Length: 620
Image 1 (cartoon, rainbow, N blue to C red):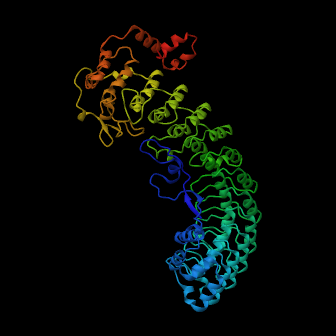
Image 2: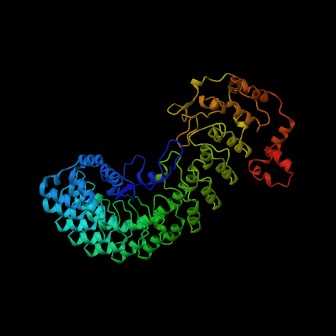
Image 3: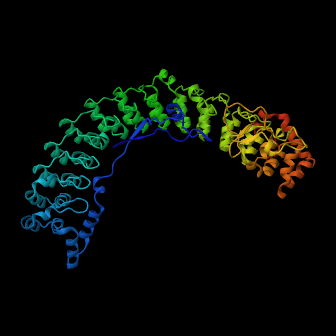
């Protein structure tokens, strides 16, 4: 049976924004709209839903020794003589009861079962005939789960019992509480003889089961073309939509059942029918990576340019789910004009879900690596992200980011630098990649005016990441520039550095700078103000120590001095700042300053002795 399911994958946004790209492009910020894709969900087998009590008894009684008089007495007391005789297959005993105590054959147990149900479920056809002769009106008697004897016989695949019940006038169209009919159950069990028997006795071939599912839907989901043929010959509709307008053809495409798919198309099924969400068979085959089904649908003129209600083409879906071979097949069948008018490009979806192989295929076939998200959708993100590169970085897709950068992705198209997003995520490999490709290490955040590089604040206590930035030219000296110097600083309560909801520069509750494009505060935040916030101050010593290794001589302001004085283990850091730095360190700092930030990236390629390279790289 069909139930809804989302196409969205992992979140595209870091920090407080948990919407995916499709959430934003399709539904907006607060949408309650239903998701765009659907999937097949199978209900539990009828046999599995039968009374556990009954099944337990059957297994115990069949395995226990039958020589004990106590056992016989207990069983009789538990199930009654009629059911006891039926389970033993004692036709004579059942016949005697039908003559001497016919009402005992109508005795119900706690699940609403009468001996007729036990006989059908156990496959005791002769006992079934005797009961039906004694009580012909009970043929359609239902259990508390609304199961008829016919449905129980079908679920247990007892054809002789099914034939007996149908000959006695059993209604083949009565469904259980779960809306399963005998015909549906026979299709679920792939039982051709049972299907033929039910149809020959007038079973309604197009009867709807749960969520509008028909027998043809079930036969197609099992790729049983023989049963499909029998159903269609009996008058089954070729395109019956279920509750969500899902046709058997869409079921076949979703399951990758090429046999059933080819059969239905040959019988005239519409390859371009859409569900209530606008999903076609090609969308479902693309979503699940069924190459053969996609190829078959395309040869049968399935429209690759028919969008869902949310504007997504099959190519978008294949890209999102990472099926690069399907993407290769769909690219040539997809209109470039349609893609330009989509809310999001397939490359963005590939980047969102780190589908690096898909990104490579799309770029090879002409996708614009610097295509940006439509402004109407970009503004729904606090950081106004726009490029596929930013989405890749925001979701930890280092390999995809590398593919995009190697294809010429521009690092300057997003309002917030992808480098800052990578730093906020704490991904050293992505940060190193972006720096290698020319990312500006001292870039700032539009909404946060600072006198020091924003990347330093985003590092938090990640010292290895901070060292990576400093080694690549991050301006450590600016962290020690303070307008107050050795004079007393304003109290923390008077500072314009606040947590979310305050005035001035608003920090996240964990004291990280928010990546957004809102209006920046009038006054820039100094390093000493940021590092003295409660969350960060406990890391002040190691952070300042690392910064001192990347400057010549720096004088600490009174706020930084107070922080270092607050812990005994940090006094060594304070002494380092007060003492003249070694000549070895000053020379290294001078050489690195003369080289400049951009040349530092090529330091390891210079024709210099290894020891000198290690010295200049701060490896020694």
